[in-house]
Amino acid sequence: MIEFKSLHTKKLNKKVINNICKLKEESWAHGIKSQLVYFKKNIKNTDIHNLIYNIGDLIGYTVLRKRKMKYKKKYYNFLLLDAIIIKKKYRKKNFGRKIMLFNNKIIKDKKMLSILLCKNKNVKFFEKFHWKKISLKHCLISGYKSKKNLMYFNSSKKFNKNSKAEIFVNS
Image (cartoon, rainbow, N blue to C red; front, side):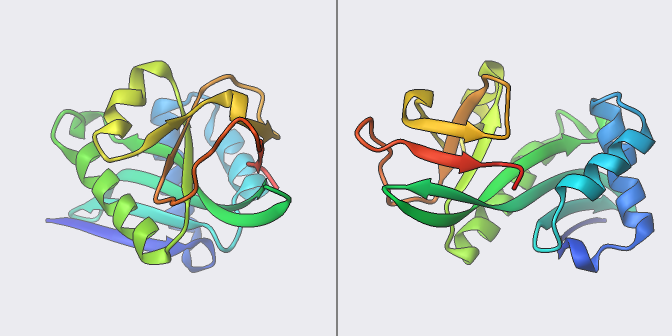
């Protein structure tokens, strides 16, 4: 039986955090200890963890990290969609679609802008779920070194070249 859960960090116990880190290890081979250090350093109590379980086994995970951005001299909260993972044996079975629909629903319910960073090969996947690409000419990403694509969802704001958005991903 497939079950979706959405929990703030403060509601996660050690077992769930370890299971998240084990699932992340399947996609990013940095070691469980490294994953745990990253989790403790970068995940805040207000971050939202979206989990998919199949008969008690964690098979999918994303995190909506509550962060800030500065745009037109004002600060705004936004949700950074991060760590989109489906367990290898469950890939190509529509779970990526299901977790994205779940993420979009939570983002809409929170009435917040959401941003993600992705590789070129993933842009079309996110566009299927109404995410829009932002030109990096219009944004400064603070605390992030990679030159990935920047995409957003659930915003009435238009990002333009006259006003650069400064996005803080790790603060």
